[in-house]
Length: 50
Image (cartoon, rainbow, N blue to C red; front, side, top):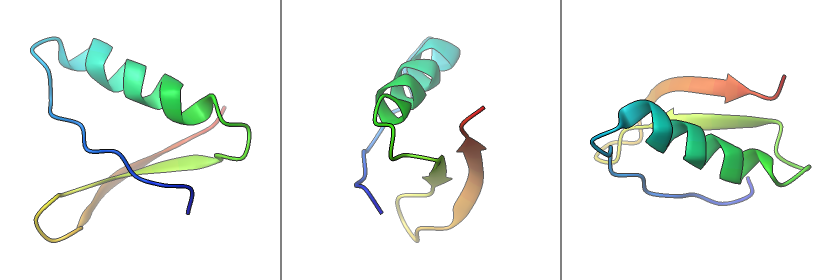
């Protein structure tokens, strides 16, 4: 686990998510990103490096 980031969904959702994934994948050690609920940590989905 590299770390975490709280992302509030911006008005332009796609751009906001793209920017967050770009930031995460800028680290070559990151292979995948889990998107989770803040309240209980439930997994919504994961995004893998291409």
